[in-house]
Image 1 (cartoon, rainbow, N blue to C red):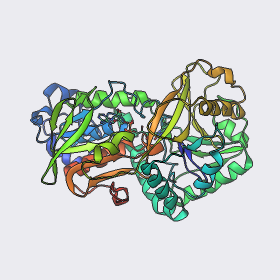
Image 2 (cartoon, helix red, strand yellow; image 1 turned 180 degrees about the horizontal axis):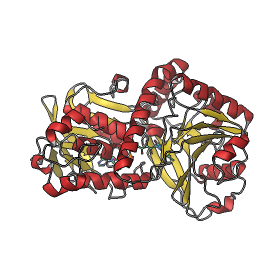
Image 3 (cartoon, protein in one colour; image 1 turned 45 degrees about the vertical axis):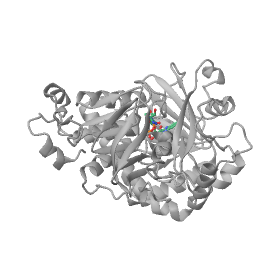
Image 4 (spheres, rainbow, N blue to C red; image 1 turned 60 degrees about the horizontal axis):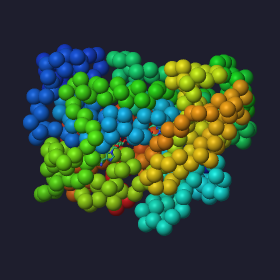
Length: 466
Ligand SMILES: Cc1cc2nc3c(=O)[nH]c(=O)nc-3n(C[C@H](O)[C@H](O)[C@H](O)COP(=O)(O)OP(=O)(O)OC[C@H]3O[C@@H](n4cnc5c(N)ncnc54)[C@H](O)[C@@H]3O)c2cc1C
């Protein structure tokens, strides 16, 4: 989970019109993306290109990889997604808090994070923790994080994060106009237990207004009036009306189904283990004992991406930020809006009749073991904001574990590797990967097409740390 804030860690957490116009001639169009997927499936489009030399080969069937596949298909490119898990793999994209967050314009590397992290290191139930260990990659990552946790980095990044999140939100809404996958466009409440917390959030609301993000500071009564379905004991809240929420598992199923219906291939239980490179280009990906040829290759492997990029010459600084979620199937009360419990750094999201609580960021290697004490930290915070809830409500609820791919400056890696023209990296989205999935997919499709990206992503270059 992520979170921004002066000291804060956050809890979290179209188409190429001109291109499809030429590529999709003869295919009946749906209103927004230019593709009617039922017609596409029926006439076999885009399988006419399946010979391989036009194919985009994508490693990773999480939200970033599937979004890339979807947008490449919209642009008329055949795709093959290689995923080592089965259909429901243990990636980071299914059990997260499901928030789409234009409100999150402050990167994880922000002022105050270092001090806060050091203080929290001695609390076993704290929401943020770095497990110290003698590991060269961790030391490099921590050094780079320290160098970016300052106000000028935030000032340099916030408009880019705003633009990426707003464009992604637009793409979510556009897709929701074609197919109902449960997108709720009701906004996000930053719920503050303390007046200090509310003051800090009010400062962020003012910063949001400076860059055109809507935000409203509310007292306790106004907060309750906005979401009467749940009793709250809070000092107030900030409401970000442009934020949205959804069930990420359902969204992923929707994306996967559309990719397949449009002729894309999703190959499960296949581990990508290396690229064949010659003359400054990748000619094939080796995975599942086979060679997968293509014109372009995309690494969207989440926290597991750096291993694949080493041979192509990129040492990508990345750490796994482990987080947990707990989903109550029949909660005592059901809010209508998603919220973040500001001081506790816990995200709360209604998903149909269920209620999901998500939190913690443990930087401690790529292991998916559950740390019961940190899960207890999430559970214990709930009743102090929502007094009707009890710790016993969570008995027997199995925690879901996810590893966020965290870059040291809190910005994603999106772009090509300098020396290899047809290898694209799309990862490092940390606590915003769901939110930034669609825009990342569109940007990948633009890079594959060789057109100027609609947002300047020079700051996201995968080789920015050398
Ligand atoms: C508790 C929690 C709450 C969160 N809440 C939010 C939220 O509300 N909003 C938000 O925007 N973000 C949220 N996030 C962050 C978000 O979940 C991640 O940023 C996002 O899921 C990352 O997606 P991804 O596709 O990059 O990686 P993943 O989902 O991890 O997918 C990568 C895929 O690549 C596959 N793979 C890797 N290596 C190989 C290989 N060699 N061969 C084949 N396959 C391979 C993996 O099996 C995996 O399926 C949350 C995260 C956590 C942990």
